[in-house]
Image (cartoon, rainbow, N blue to C red):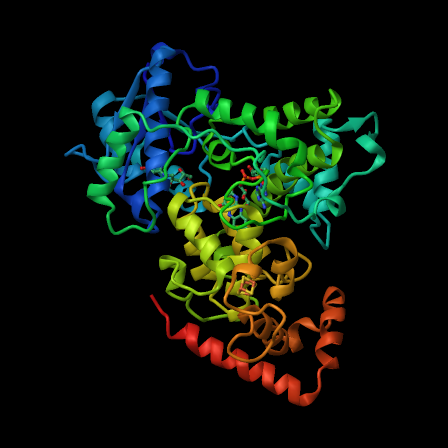
Length: 511
Ligand code: FAD
Ligand code: DLZ
Ligand code: SF4
Protein backbone atom coordinates (compact mmCIF):
# COMPACT_ATOMS: atom_id res chain seq x y z
CA UNK A 1 0.00 0.00 0.00
CA UNK A 2 1.26 3.51 -0.81
CA UNK A 3 0.03 6.57 1.02
CA UNK A 4 0.81 9.98 -0.42
CA UNK A 5 1.45 12.56 2.29
CA UNK A 6 1.81 16.14 0.99
CA UNK A 7 3.67 18.35 3.46
CA UNK A 8 3.12 22.09 3.01
CA UNK A 9 5.74 24.77 3.57
CA UNK A 10 4.50 25.64 7.05
CA UNK A 11 4.21 22.00 8.16
CA UNK A 12 7.89 21.38 8.93
CA UNK A 13 7.32 19.54 12.21
CA UNK A 14 8.70 16.02 12.69
CA UNK A 15 5.58 15.07 14.68
CA UNK A 16 3.11 16.47 12.08
CA UNK A 17 -0.34 14.91 12.49
CA UNK A 18 -0.31 13.54 8.90
CA UNK A 19 2.65 11.32 9.81
CA UNK A 20 1.19 9.86 12.99
CA UNK A 21 0.64 6.12 12.95
CA UNK A 22 1.88 5.81 9.36
CA UNK A 23 4.47 3.11 8.61
CA UNK A 24 7.46 4.63 6.85
CA UNK A 25 7.51 1.78 4.32
CA UNK A 26 3.99 2.73 3.15
CA UNK A 27 4.50 6.46 2.77
CA UNK A 28 5.76 8.87 0.15
CA UNK A 29 6.07 12.37 1.57
CA UNK A 30 5.61 15.07 -1.06
CA UNK A 31 7.15 18.51 -0.59
CA UNK A 32 6.61 21.12 -3.29
CA UNK A 33 8.05 24.50 -4.19
CA UNK A 34 5.34 25.86 -6.47
CA UNK A 35 4.90 29.10 -8.40
CA UNK A 36 1.31 29.65 -7.28
CA UNK A 37 2.36 29.85 -3.63
CA UNK A 38 5.21 32.23 -4.40
CA UNK A 39 2.99 34.59 -6.38
CA UNK A 40 -0.37 34.99 -4.62
CA UNK A 41 1.21 38.07 -3.10
CA UNK A 42 4.65 39.53 -3.87
CA UNK A 43 6.34 37.92 -0.87
CA UNK A 44 9.48 39.56 0.51
CA UNK A 45 12.55 37.82 -0.92
CA UNK A 46 13.62 36.75 2.57
CA UNK A 47 10.24 35.11 3.18
CA UNK A 48 10.53 32.85 0.15
CA UNK A 49 14.21 32.21 0.91
CA UNK A 50 13.43 31.28 4.51
CA UNK A 51 10.63 28.92 3.49
CA UNK A 52 12.50 27.17 0.70
CA UNK A 53 15.71 26.83 2.75
CA UNK A 54 13.75 25.48 5.73
CA UNK A 55 11.77 23.12 3.45
CA UNK A 56 14.91 21.76 1.79
CA UNK A 57 16.62 21.20 5.13
CA UNK A 58 13.50 19.60 6.55
CA UNK A 59 13.30 17.19 3.60
CA UNK A 60 16.86 16.08 4.42
CA UNK A 61 15.99 15.71 8.11
CA UNK A 62 12.96 13.54 7.24
CA UNK A 63 15.08 11.38 4.92
CA UNK A 64 17.67 10.97 7.68
CA UNK A 65 14.86 9.67 9.90
CA UNK A 66 13.98 7.03 7.31
CA UNK A 67 11.09 8.65 5.40
CA UNK A 68 10.90 8.55 1.63
CA UNK A 69 10.60 12.16 0.53
CA UNK A 70 9.80 13.33 -2.97
CA UNK A 71 10.92 16.95 -3.17
CA UNK A 72 9.90 19.07 -6.15
CA UNK A 73 12.01 22.17 -6.68
CA UNK A 74 10.70 25.36 -8.22
CA UNK A 75 13.11 25.09 -11.13
CA UNK A 76 12.22 21.47 -11.89
CA UNK A 77 11.28 21.70 -15.61
CA UNK A 78 8.16 19.56 -15.07
CA UNK A 79 6.95 21.53 -12.05
CA UNK A 80 3.18 21.92 -12.46
CA UNK A 81 3.14 25.20 -10.54
CA UNK A 82 0.49 24.46 -7.91
CA UNK A 83 -0.14 22.12 -4.98
CA UNK A 84 -2.97 20.42 -6.84
CA UNK A 85 -0.94 20.10 -10.04
CA UNK A 86 1.97 18.56 -8.14
CA UNK A 87 -0.26 16.14 -6.25
CA UNK A 88 -1.68 15.07 -9.64
CA UNK A 89 1.85 14.44 -10.94
CA UNK A 90 2.81 12.55 -7.77
CA UNK A 91 -0.27 10.32 -8.16
CA UNK A 92 0.99 9.43 -11.66
CA UNK A 93 4.46 8.61 -10.29
CA UNK A 94 3.56 6.70 -7.14
CA UNK A 95 0.04 5.37 -7.75
CA UNK A 96 -1.01 5.80 -4.08
CA UNK A 97 -4.15 4.20 -2.67
CA UNK A 98 -4.89 7.18 -0.50
CA UNK A 99 -3.78 10.62 0.61
CA UNK A 100 -3.25 11.86 4.15
CA UNK A 101 -2.62 15.55 4.73
CA UNK A 102 -2.64 17.92 7.70
CA UNK A 103 -5.19 20.71 7.30
CA UNK A 104 -3.90 23.92 5.71
CA UNK A 105 -3.29 27.18 7.52
CA UNK A 106 -5.54 29.23 5.30
CA UNK A 107 -8.89 29.08 3.57
CA UNK A 108 -7.42 29.30 0.06
CA UNK A 109 -5.22 26.23 0.48
CA UNK A 110 -7.75 24.31 2.60
CA UNK A 111 -10.19 24.55 -0.34
CA UNK A 112 -7.56 22.88 -2.53
CA UNK A 113 -7.07 20.01 -0.08
CA UNK A 114 -10.83 19.53 0.15
CA UNK A 115 -11.12 19.22 -3.63
CA UNK A 116 -8.62 16.36 -3.95
CA UNK A 117 -10.82 13.42 -2.95
CA UNK A 118 -13.31 14.08 -5.75
CA UNK A 119 -10.78 15.37 -8.24
CA UNK A 120 -8.43 12.39 -7.90
CA UNK A 121 -10.94 9.74 -6.87
CA UNK A 122 -8.73 8.81 -3.92
CA UNK A 123 -9.71 8.69 -0.25
CA UNK A 124 -8.21 11.84 1.25
CA UNK A 125 -7.92 12.14 4.99
CA UNK A 126 -7.46 15.73 6.18
CA UNK A 127 -6.17 15.64 9.73
CA UNK A 128 -6.44 18.37 12.34
CA UNK A 129 -3.29 20.40 12.94
CA UNK A 130 -2.53 19.47 16.53
CA UNK A 131 0.43 21.85 16.76
CA UNK A 132 -2.20 24.36 17.85
CA UNK A 133 -3.33 24.07 21.44
CA UNK A 134 -6.95 24.99 20.84
CA UNK A 135 -8.82 22.89 18.27
CA UNK A 136 -11.47 24.45 16.05
CA UNK A 137 -14.14 22.65 18.08
CA UNK A 138 -12.69 23.88 21.39
CA UNK A 139 -12.64 27.46 20.11
CA UNK A 140 -16.22 27.17 18.92
CA UNK A 141 -17.17 25.72 22.31
CA UNK A 142 -15.55 28.67 24.07
CA UNK A 143 -17.11 31.24 21.71
CA UNK A 144 -20.61 29.79 21.71
CA UNK A 145 -23.25 32.01 23.24
CA UNK A 146 -20.83 34.87 23.94
CA UNK A 147 -21.72 38.33 22.69
CA UNK A 148 -18.11 39.50 22.93
CA UNK A 149 -15.09 37.30 22.24
CA UNK A 150 -12.68 38.89 24.66
CA UNK A 151 -9.09 37.65 24.31
CA UNK A 152 -8.39 37.98 28.03
CA UNK A 153 -11.10 35.45 28.94
CA UNK A 154 -10.02 33.07 26.20
CA UNK A 155 -6.49 33.33 27.55
CA UNK A 156 -7.59 32.50 31.09
CA UNK A 157 -9.42 29.44 29.79
CA UNK A 158 -6.24 28.41 27.97
CA UNK A 159 -4.19 28.86 31.14
CA UNK A 160 -6.57 26.49 32.90
CA UNK A 161 -6.57 23.96 30.05
CA UNK A 162 -2.80 23.87 29.69
CA UNK A 163 -2.03 24.32 33.39
CA UNK A 164 0.60 26.89 32.42
CA UNK A 165 1.46 29.33 35.22
CA UNK A 166 -1.21 27.90 37.47
CA UNK A 167 -0.87 27.25 41.18
CA UNK A 168 -3.74 24.86 41.65
CA UNK A 169 -6.87 26.76 40.59
CA UNK A 170 -5.18 30.13 40.87
CA UNK A 171 -2.96 32.00 38.47
CA UNK A 172 0.68 32.20 39.55
CA UNK A 173 1.25 35.39 41.53
CA UNK A 174 -2.51 35.62 42.08
CA UNK A 175 -2.98 37.70 38.93
CA UNK A 176 -3.78 36.65 35.38
CA UNK A 177 -2.18 39.56 33.64
CA UNK A 178 0.85 41.76 34.30
CA UNK A 179 0.46 43.90 31.20
CA UNK A 180 0.43 47.18 33.13
CA UNK A 181 4.01 46.48 34.23
CA UNK A 182 5.06 45.84 30.65
CA UNK A 183 5.02 49.31 29.15
CA UNK A 184 8.43 50.74 29.97
CA UNK A 185 10.41 52.75 27.45
CA UNK A 186 13.89 51.30 26.88
CA UNK A 187 17.40 52.72 26.61
CA UNK A 188 19.97 51.11 24.33
CA UNK A 189 22.88 49.63 26.22
CA UNK A 190 25.82 47.45 25.34
CA UNK A 191 24.47 44.52 27.33
CA UNK A 192 21.32 44.23 25.25
CA UNK A 193 20.65 40.65 24.16
CA UNK A 194 21.19 39.77 20.52
CA UNK A 195 19.70 36.91 18.52
CA UNK A 196 22.25 34.51 17.06
CA UNK A 197 22.98 35.35 13.42
CA UNK A 198 23.12 32.21 11.26
CA UNK A 199 25.48 32.19 8.32
CA UNK A 200 23.64 30.92 5.20
CA UNK A 201 24.99 27.47 4.27
CA UNK A 202 25.30 25.98 0.77
CA UNK A 203 21.64 24.91 0.65
CA UNK A 204 20.45 28.38 1.65
CA UNK A 205 22.84 30.08 -0.79
CA UNK A 206 21.48 27.91 -3.58
CA UNK A 207 18.00 29.15 -2.66
CA UNK A 208 19.28 32.75 -2.71
CA UNK A 209 20.45 32.28 -6.31
CA UNK A 210 17.01 30.99 -7.26
CA UNK A 211 15.31 33.94 -5.55
CA UNK A 212 17.55 36.49 -7.26
CA UNK A 213 16.84 34.84 -10.62
CA UNK A 214 13.09 34.37 -10.23
CA UNK A 215 11.92 37.03 -7.77
CA UNK A 216 14.10 40.04 -8.51
CA UNK A 217 10.97 42.23 -8.67
CA UNK A 218 9.76 41.20 -5.21
CA UNK A 219 10.28 43.60 -2.30
CA UNK A 220 13.04 43.29 0.26
CA UNK A 221 16.60 42.17 0.29
CA UNK A 222 18.57 39.03 1.15
CA UNK A 223 21.71 40.86 2.23
CA UNK A 224 20.94 40.74 5.94
CA UNK A 225 19.43 37.24 5.89
CA UNK A 226 20.57 35.42 9.01
CA UNK A 227 17.50 33.33 9.94
CA UNK A 228 17.70 29.85 11.38
CA UNK A 229 16.66 27.36 8.70
CA UNK A 230 16.81 24.08 10.61
CA UNK A 231 15.11 22.86 13.77
CA UNK A 232 18.51 22.65 15.51
CA UNK A 233 19.32 26.28 14.70
CA UNK A 234 15.86 27.42 15.74
CA UNK A 235 16.36 25.55 19.00
CA UNK A 236 19.67 27.39 19.60
CA UNK A 237 17.86 30.68 18.98
CA UNK A 238 15.17 29.73 21.49
CA UNK A 239 17.77 28.80 24.12
CA UNK A 240 19.51 32.12 23.50
CA UNK A 241 16.21 33.96 24.06
CA UNK A 242 15.46 32.17 27.33
CA UNK A 243 18.98 32.77 28.65
CA UNK A 244 19.38 36.41 27.69
CA UNK A 245 16.19 38.22 26.66
CA UNK A 246 13.25 36.63 28.47
CA UNK A 247 13.95 38.23 31.88
CA UNK A 248 13.27 41.71 30.48
CA UNK A 249 10.86 40.69 27.70
CA UNK A 250 7.94 42.01 29.74
CA UNK A 251 9.40 45.34 30.82
CA UNK A 252 10.28 46.41 27.28
CA UNK A 253 7.61 44.61 25.29
CA UNK A 254 6.22 47.86 23.85
CA UNK A 255 9.48 49.80 23.56
CA UNK A 256 11.09 50.95 20.29
CA UNK A 257 14.64 52.19 19.71
CA UNK A 258 16.42 53.57 16.66
CA UNK A 259 18.64 50.98 15.01
CA UNK A 260 17.54 48.22 17.41
CA UNK A 261 15.55 45.62 15.57
CA UNK A 262 15.13 43.04 18.29
CA UNK A 263 15.17 44.62 21.76
CA UNK A 264 14.07 41.90 24.19
CA UNK A 265 11.77 40.09 21.75
CA UNK A 266 12.23 36.44 20.95
CA UNK A 267 12.27 36.70 17.11
CA UNK A 268 10.98 33.13 17.05
CA UNK A 269 7.65 33.61 15.25
CA UNK A 270 8.87 32.40 11.82
CA UNK A 271 10.10 29.16 13.38
CA UNK A 272 6.96 28.55 15.41
CA UNK A 273 4.73 29.29 12.41
CA UNK A 274 6.45 26.82 10.07
CA UNK A 275 6.82 24.15 12.75
CA UNK A 276 10.54 24.26 13.56
CA UNK A 277 9.63 25.10 17.17
CA UNK A 278 6.73 23.88 19.25
CA UNK A 279 4.66 26.61 20.96
CA UNK A 280 3.67 24.55 24.02
CA UNK A 281 7.26 23.46 24.60
CA UNK A 282 8.39 27.11 24.47
CA UNK A 283 5.74 28.12 27.01
CA UNK A 284 6.71 25.29 29.37
CA UNK A 285 10.33 26.30 29.15
CA UNK A 286 9.44 29.94 29.81
CA UNK A 287 7.48 28.83 32.88
CA UNK A 288 10.47 26.78 34.07
CA UNK A 289 12.60 29.95 33.92
CA UNK A 290 10.11 31.60 36.27
CA UNK A 291 9.82 28.63 38.62
CA UNK A 292 13.61 28.46 38.89
CA UNK A 293 13.77 32.17 39.70
CA UNK A 294 15.62 33.09 36.52
CA UNK A 295 12.92 35.25 34.95
CA UNK A 296 10.28 37.44 36.62
CA UNK A 297 6.59 36.66 36.40
CA UNK A 298 5.69 39.78 34.41
CA UNK A 299 8.06 38.63 31.64
CA UNK A 300 7.01 35.00 31.60
CA UNK A 301 3.29 35.71 31.89
CA UNK A 302 3.61 38.26 29.05
CA UNK A 303 5.38 35.73 26.85
CA UNK A 304 2.95 32.90 27.59
CA UNK A 305 -0.01 35.25 26.95
CA UNK A 306 1.28 36.11 23.47
CA UNK A 307 1.43 32.45 22.55
CA UNK A 308 -1.44 30.62 24.24
CA UNK A 309 -3.51 33.79 24.31
CA UNK A 310 -3.07 35.97 21.24
CA UNK A 311 -1.65 33.39 18.86
CA UNK A 312 -4.35 30.80 19.51
CA UNK A 313 -7.08 33.43 19.74
CA UNK A 314 -6.36 35.02 16.34
CA UNK A 315 -6.29 31.57 14.77
CA UNK A 316 -9.67 30.80 16.32
CA UNK A 317 -11.10 34.07 15.00
CA UNK A 318 -9.65 33.48 11.52
CA UNK A 319 -11.36 30.12 11.10
CA UNK A 320 -14.56 31.12 12.88
CA UNK A 321 -15.14 34.24 10.79
CA UNK A 322 -14.66 32.51 7.44
CA UNK A 323 -13.07 33.54 4.15
CA UNK A 324 -15.18 36.71 3.92
CA UNK A 325 -13.36 38.17 6.91
CA UNK A 326 -10.67 39.45 4.51
CA UNK A 327 -13.22 41.69 2.74
CA UNK A 328 -14.45 43.55 5.82
CA UNK A 329 -13.99 47.29 5.86
CA UNK A 330 -15.93 48.67 8.82
CA UNK A 331 -14.50 52.18 8.53
CA UNK A 332 -15.00 52.25 4.75
CA UNK A 333 -11.37 53.14 4.22
CA UNK A 334 -10.30 53.20 0.59
CA UNK A 335 -7.00 55.07 0.28
CA UNK A 336 -3.88 53.48 -1.14
CA UNK A 337 -0.80 52.95 0.94
CA UNK A 338 1.87 55.54 0.12
CA UNK A 339 4.83 54.41 -2.01
CA UNK A 340 7.22 54.68 0.91
CA UNK A 341 5.84 51.44 2.37
CA UNK A 342 7.93 49.79 -0.38
CA UNK A 343 10.82 52.25 -0.59
CA UNK A 344 11.41 53.69 2.94
CA UNK A 345 11.58 57.14 1.39
CA UNK A 346 9.85 59.18 4.05
CA UNK A 347 11.06 61.88 6.38
CA UNK A 348 9.02 60.44 9.28
CA UNK A 349 11.79 58.79 11.27
CA UNK A 350 9.56 56.23 13.02
CA UNK A 351 8.16 55.05 9.68
CA UNK A 352 11.56 54.98 8.00
CA UNK A 353 12.89 52.85 10.88
CA UNK A 354 10.03 50.35 10.92
CA UNK A 355 9.80 50.04 7.14
CA UNK A 356 13.58 50.13 6.65
CA UNK A 357 14.22 47.17 8.92
CA UNK A 358 11.23 45.36 7.45
CA UNK A 359 12.54 45.65 3.90
CA UNK A 360 16.05 44.74 5.03
CA UNK A 361 15.10 41.69 7.09
CA UNK A 362 11.41 40.78 6.79
CA UNK A 363 10.89 41.38 10.51
CA UNK A 364 9.64 44.17 12.76
CA UNK A 365 8.41 43.75 16.27
CA UNK A 366 4.82 43.99 17.40
CA UNK A 367 4.66 47.64 18.44
CA UNK A 368 6.33 48.76 15.23
CA UNK A 369 3.75 46.77 13.25
CA UNK A 370 0.81 47.97 15.35
CA UNK A 371 1.61 51.50 16.46
CA UNK A 372 3.85 52.77 13.66
CA UNK A 373 3.06 51.30 10.22
CA UNK A 374 -0.36 49.96 11.22
CA UNK A 375 -1.37 53.12 13.08
CA UNK A 376 -0.30 55.32 10.17
CA UNK A 377 -2.29 53.23 7.65
CA UNK A 378 -5.33 53.43 9.94
CA UNK A 379 -5.02 57.21 10.38
CA UNK A 380 -4.76 57.93 6.65
CA UNK A 381 -7.72 55.64 5.93
CA UNK A 382 -5.85 53.04 3.90
CA UNK A 383 -7.94 50.20 2.50
CA UNK A 384 -7.63 47.30 4.98
CA UNK A 385 -7.43 44.80 2.12
CA UNK A 386 -4.37 46.58 0.80
CA UNK A 387 -2.82 46.89 4.25
CA UNK A 388 -3.45 43.16 4.73
CA UNK A 389 -1.67 42.43 1.43
CA UNK A 390 1.34 44.50 2.51
CA UNK A 391 1.70 42.69 5.83
CA UNK A 392 1.18 39.30 4.22
CA UNK A 393 3.91 39.89 1.68
CA UNK A 394 6.43 41.75 3.75
CA UNK A 395 6.94 39.68 6.94
CA UNK A 396 8.80 36.39 7.06
CA UNK A 397 6.38 35.08 9.70
CA UNK A 398 3.27 36.06 7.71
CA UNK A 399 0.68 33.35 7.10
CA UNK A 400 -2.89 34.42 6.58
CA UNK A 401 -4.39 32.77 9.68
CA UNK A 402 -2.24 34.93 11.95
CA UNK A 403 -1.53 37.97 9.79
CA UNK A 404 -5.11 38.74 8.71
CA UNK A 405 -6.79 39.05 12.13
CA UNK A 406 -3.83 41.03 13.43
CA UNK A 407 -3.86 43.42 10.48
CA UNK A 408 -7.48 43.76 9.46
CA UNK A 409 -8.91 43.21 12.93
CA UNK A 410 -6.50 44.47 15.55
CA UNK A 411 -4.62 47.10 13.58
CA UNK A 412 -7.16 48.47 11.08
CA UNK A 413 -10.44 48.01 13.02
CA UNK A 414 -11.79 46.56 9.77
CA UNK A 415 -14.00 44.12 11.68
CA UNK A 416 -15.59 46.90 13.72
CA UNK A 417 -14.28 45.75 17.08
CA UNK A 418 -14.58 41.99 17.00
CA UNK A 419 -10.93 41.64 17.93
CA UNK A 420 -10.13 44.88 19.71
CA UNK A 421 -12.48 47.02 21.70
CA UNK A 422 -11.25 50.25 20.11
CA UNK A 423 -9.10 51.29 17.15
CA UNK A 424 -5.37 51.34 17.85
CA UNK A 425 -5.18 54.96 16.70
CA UNK A 426 -2.58 57.15 18.36
CA UNK A 427 -0.92 60.51 17.88
CA UNK A 428 2.83 61.12 17.92
CA UNK A 429 2.73 61.38 21.73
CA UNK A 430 2.42 57.58 22.04
CA UNK A 431 5.38 56.97 19.74
CA UNK A 432 7.38 59.59 21.62
CA UNK A 433 6.60 57.96 24.97
CA UNK A 434 7.61 54.47 23.84
CA UNK A 435 10.65 55.24 21.68
CA UNK A 436 13.62 57.49 20.99
CA UNK A 437 12.40 58.12 17.45
CA UNK A 438 10.97 61.61 17.80
CA UNK A 439 14.21 63.16 19.07
CA UNK A 440 15.80 62.12 15.77
CA UNK A 441 12.98 63.20 13.51
CA UNK A 442 12.73 66.30 11.36
CA UNK A 443 9.18 66.80 12.67
CA UNK A 444 8.19 68.27 16.01
CA UNK A 445 6.10 65.77 17.94
CA UNK A 446 4.63 68.51 20.14
CA UNK A 447 3.12 70.45 17.25
CA UNK A 448 -0.21 69.75 15.59
CA UNK A 449 -0.21 72.27 12.76
CA UNK A 450 2.37 73.81 10.49
CA UNK A 451 4.81 72.16 8.11
CA UNK A 452 7.09 70.97 10.92
CA UNK A 453 4.30 69.37 12.95
CA UNK A 454 4.40 65.59 13.41
CA UNK A 455 2.02 64.18 10.76
CA UNK A 456 0.62 61.63 13.22
CA UNK A 457 -0.90 64.46 15.29
CA UNK A 458 -3.18 66.15 12.78
CA UNK A 459 -3.97 62.78 11.20
CA UNK A 460 -5.00 61.38 14.58
CA UNK A 461 -7.48 64.16 15.30
CA UNK A 462 -8.73 64.10 11.74
CA UNK A 463 -9.30 60.33 12.03
CA UNK A 464 -11.42 60.94 15.12
CA UNK A 465 -13.35 63.71 13.42
CA UNK A 466 -13.93 61.65 10.25
CA UNK A 467 -15.32 58.74 12.25
CA UNK A 468 -17.15 60.64 15.00
CA UNK A 469 -20.51 59.21 14.05
CA UNK A 470 -19.25 55.63 14.19
CA UNK A 471 -16.85 55.80 17.12
CA UNK A 472 -18.04 58.47 19.54
CA UNK A 473 -20.41 56.04 21.30
CA UNK A 474 -17.58 53.63 22.06
CA UNK A 475 -16.96 54.02 25.83
CA UNK A 476 -13.22 53.54 25.29
CA UNK A 477 -13.18 56.54 22.95
CA UNK A 478 -15.03 58.93 25.27
CA UNK A 479 -11.90 60.58 26.61
CA UNK A 480 -10.46 61.09 23.11
CA UNK A 481 -13.67 62.73 21.87
CA UNK A 482 -13.86 64.86 25.00
CA UNK A 483 -10.37 66.14 24.22
CA UNK A 484 -11.31 66.81 20.60
CA UNK A 485 -14.31 68.83 21.79
CA UNK A 486 -12.01 70.98 23.95
CA UNK A 487 -10.29 72.49 20.92
CA UNK A 488 -11.71 75.78 19.68
CA UNK A 489 -13.44 75.81 16.33
CA UNK A 490 -10.44 77.59 14.82
CA UNK A 491 -8.03 75.00 16.21
CA UNK A 492 -10.16 72.17 14.87
CA UNK A 493 -10.28 73.77 11.43
CA UNK A 494 -6.50 74.29 11.41
CA UNK A 495 -5.87 70.66 12.45
CA UNK A 496 -8.20 69.35 9.79
CA UNK A 497 -6.60 71.66 7.22
CA UNK A 498 -3.15 70.28 8.04
CA UNK A 499 -4.53 66.72 7.87
CA UNK A 500 -6.10 67.47 4.50
CA UNK A 501 -2.74 68.63 3.13
CA UNK A 502 -1.04 65.53 4.47
CA UNK A 503 -3.64 63.19 3.03
CA UNK A 504 -3.29 64.85 -0.34
CA UNK A 505 0.48 64.50 -0.16
CA UNK A 506 0.38 60.83 0.77
CA UNK A 507 -2.37 60.07 -1.72
CA UNK A 508 -0.06 61.40 -4.44
CA UNK A 509 2.52 58.81 -3.49
CA UNK A 510 0.82 55.80 -4.97
CA UNK A 511 3.16 52.97 -5.82
P1 FAD B 1 7.60 38.20 20.64
O1 FAD B 1 7.35 39.62 20.94
O2 FAD B 1 8.84 37.59 21.18
O3 FAD B 1 6.31 37.36 21.13
C1 FAD B 1 6.37 35.98 21.44
C2 FAD B 1 5.53 35.15 20.51
O4 FAD B 1 4.17 35.40 20.72
C3 FAD B 1 5.76 35.40 19.03
O5 FAD B 1 6.87 34.67 18.55
C4 FAD B 1 4.44 34.98 18.40
O6 FAD B 1 4.44 33.61 18.12
C5 FAD B 1 3.43 35.25 19.51
N1 FAD B 1 2.68 36.49 19.28
C6 FAD B 1 2.94 37.70 19.83
N2 FAD B 1 1.98 38.57 19.49
C7 FAD B 1 1.12 37.92 18.69
C8 FAD B 1 -0.07 38.29 18.02
N3 FAD B 1 -0.58 39.52 18.09
N4 FAD B 1 -0.68 37.36 17.27
C9 FAD B 1 -0.19 36.10 17.17
N5 FAD B 1 0.93 35.69 17.80
C10 FAD B 1 1.57 36.60 18.56
N6 FAD B 1 2.60 37.50 13.92
C11 FAD B 1 2.90 36.46 13.12
O7 FAD B 1 3.38 35.43 13.60
N7 FAD B 1 2.68 36.53 11.78
C12 FAD B 1 2.16 37.64 11.20
O8 FAD B 1 1.97 37.68 10.00
C13 FAD B 1 1.84 38.75 12.02
N8 FAD B 1 1.32 39.88 11.49
C14 FAD B 1 1.04 40.93 12.30
C15 FAD B 1 0.48 42.08 11.73
C16 FAD B 1 0.16 43.17 12.52
C17 FAD B 1 -0.46 44.40 11.91
C18 FAD B 1 0.42 43.11 13.90
C19 FAD B 1 0.08 44.27 14.78
C20 FAD B 1 0.97 41.98 14.47
C21 FAD B 1 1.28 40.87 13.69
N9 FAD B 1 1.82 39.70 14.24
C22 FAD B 1 2.10 38.64 13.42
C23 FAD B 1 1.99 39.55 15.70
C24 FAD B 1 3.37 39.96 16.23
O9 FAD B 1 3.72 41.23 15.76
C25 FAD B 1 4.46 38.96 15.85
O10 FAD B 1 4.05 37.66 16.22
C26 FAD B 1 5.76 39.27 16.58
O11 FAD B 1 6.20 40.56 16.28
C27 FAD B 1 6.80 38.25 16.22
O12 FAD B 1 8.05 38.58 16.75
P2 FAD B 1 8.65 37.79 18.00
O13 FAD B 1 8.72 36.34 17.68
O14 FAD B 1 9.91 38.47 18.40
O15 FAD B 1 7.53 38.01 19.06
C1 DLZ C 1 4.30 31.16 1.54
C2 DLZ C 1 4.74 29.96 0.73
C3 DLZ C 1 5.55 30.13 -0.37
C4 DLZ C 1 6.11 31.44 -0.76
N1 DLZ C 1 5.91 29.09 -1.14
C5 DLZ C 1 5.51 27.85 -0.80
C6 DLZ C 1 5.84 26.73 -1.61
O1 DLZ C 1 6.43 26.84 -2.66
N2 DLZ C 1 5.47 25.51 -1.16
C7 DLZ C 1 4.78 25.33 -0.02
O2 DLZ C 1 4.54 24.18 0.35
N3 DLZ C 1 4.37 26.38 0.71
C8 DLZ C 1 4.73 27.64 0.35
N4 DLZ C 1 4.32 28.71 1.10
C9 DLZ C 1 3.37 28.50 2.21
C10 DLZ C 1 1.93 28.35 1.64
O3 DLZ C 1 1.67 29.40 0.72
C11 DLZ C 1 0.80 28.43 2.65
O4 DLZ C 1 0.90 29.66 3.31
C12 DLZ C 1 0.80 27.40 3.69
O5 DLZ C 1 0.90 26.15 3.12
C13 DLZ C 1 -0.45 27.50 4.57
O6 DLZ C 1 -1.59 27.08 3.95
FE1 SF4 D 1 7.21 59.72 14.02
FE2 SF4 D 1 6.11 62.10 14.53
FE3 SF4 D 1 7.92 61.11 16.17
FE4 SF4 D 1 8.61 61.94 13.71
S1 SF4 D 1 7.82 63.20 15.37
S2 SF4 D 1 9.29 60.07 14.74
S3 SF4 D 1 6.82 61.37 12.55
S4 SF4 D 1 5.92 60.24 15.78
